Image (cartoon, rainbow, N blue to C red):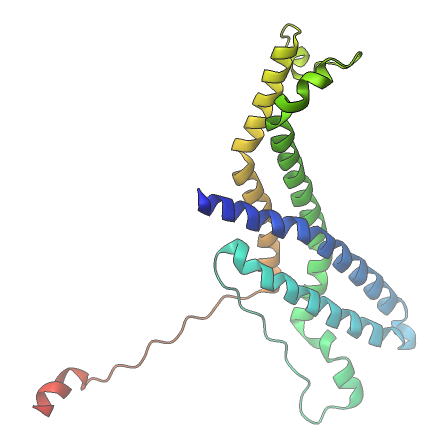
Length: 224
C-alpha cells in the first residue's frame, strides 16, 4: 500500500510540474528557432540558434533528473561533443548546434508539449473525480436541495429522482475514479516519460565484469 502511495505521489508530481516545464521549453524553443532561422541569412540568427540549443540542453537535463523516479531505473545522459582543439571562435560559438543530440533536445521541447498537456489533463480529471466523488456525501445533500439543480448521473442512467440516490450514485462514480487513479496516473506518467527517454537519454552501459585469471583456481594450492 505504501509503495502504491509513493508511486502515485511521484507520478503526480512529475506530471503536474512537467506541464509548466513543457510550456516554458516549447515557448523558448519555438521562439528561438524561429528567430534564429529567420535571421540566419544575415548571420545574426546563428548565435540565437546556438543559445537556444544551450537552453534546450539545460531544460533537457532537468527532465533527465526527473526520469529515474518515474521509470524506476537510471538513465544516461548522451554525450555532447566539445569543440575540437584549435577551433576558431565561430566554430566554438556554433558547437551546440553541431551536436546531433542538440537537435533532439530542440525537437523534444516541441514534441513533448502535447504529451505533457494530455498527461496533465488526464491526471487532474481523475484526481478531481476521485476527491469530489468520495467527499460528495459531506456536501452533496446541500447541492441536491438547491432549486433548479439537475441530479446528474441518476437522470442520465434513467433512475428515479431522490437526494439519497443522487448522493450514492455520485459517490460511486468518485469511488470508480479512486480505484483507477493509480493505473491511470501511472499510464499518463509513462506516456510523458517514454517520449523523454526515447529522445533525451541513451542506454546505461553495464559495469564491466572484473577479469578472471586462468590461474586463479590454482593460486591457493600453489601457495600451499
